[in-house]
Length: 147
Image 1 (cartoon, rainbow, N blue to C red):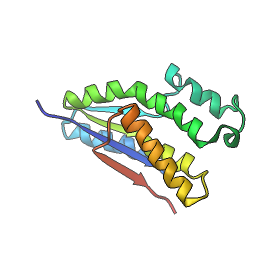
Image 2 (cartoon, rainbow, N blue to C red):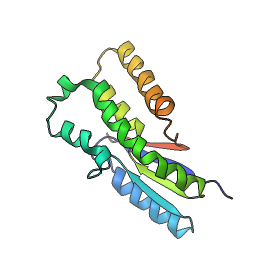
Image 3 (cartoon, rainbow, N blue to C red):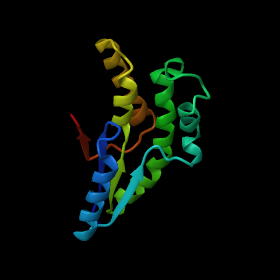
Image 4 (cartoon, helix red, strand yellow):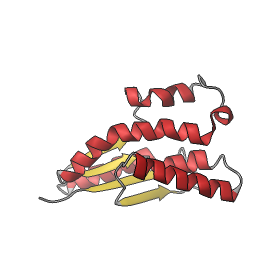
């Protein structure tokens, strides 16, 4: 059986992630590939409930919550989706994700000004997501950059 691929498209808000995801999915389907889409956060799902409350200010400001706690909210949502992603890849499908761990690195890591502290945060997040939660690692990360 053919093993699929897991591709992440990430970038800043307004960089065209949704557009590029749509175009890539269309192209892959036209080329005969079986494609599934993952989109984060998974708004409306229970796993995104803490994220929705965080973004609506229920837990205080972003500064009060801090990057570590906020990252846990997002990690739990990705953990919830990880079973579906892993199954699709094992079935030979290509999974395209609009945002993933790199989104947390950018959004939450950008709040940490000290480079050494930011590096510690990145290491912590990497371990949380890929070791503790054992979510799938992407085969390819595409980061969109807009000047």
